[in-house]
Amino acid sequence: MKLIFLGAPGAGKGTHATRVKQDYNLPHISTGDIFRANIKGGTPLGLLAKSYIDKGALVPDSVVIDIVKDRLQQADCAGGYILDGFPRTVAQADALSTFADIDAVINLILDGEVIVERVAGRRVCDCGETYNVATLGGKTTCAKCGKPLYQREDDNPQTVRNRLAVYDRETSPLLAYYRQKGLLRDVDSNGLTIDEVYAKIKAILDTL
Image (cartoon, rainbow, N blue to C red):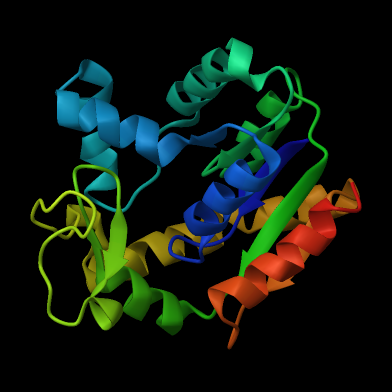
């Protein structure tokens, strides 16, 4: 299966893509993770991406498209993959269609203020684990490796609201784009637990 996960920042794309990766043995390709790795390494790409991400803006299409195209040509993608964070614009979707045949687009729906609260409370560890202050019980270290947890620079409430505004302006047209192609699958996750949302996603995937 070749899948795309759509949804506003903080809607749960990464969480559910990780579970699909495990259950269906598909590589999870997150452009955000690729950028963060480059930012941490201080690469030219990382510095360029950081200048946009810190402002809550999108990294230019040309940069993102080249990265994704290169990644999909790697051997582990031959049997399918999950794209998380790409495409974010219709121009990116058009470019993707020239080198990939997508089977379904999972669109996660969640109210904006719920997202702001969720993302602003997110804490991460260098090992890759992600937590939320709502469930940490005051703990400040990673349960997996013991390292200190921190808040990403782009997870403060104002930047999150800016990211949501950018998403609405730039990415929402993708919904019409993929709906017209018959690929869009809406998953309303408002008021549902993570397991309930994943059950909806799995029911969709099991029909592909």
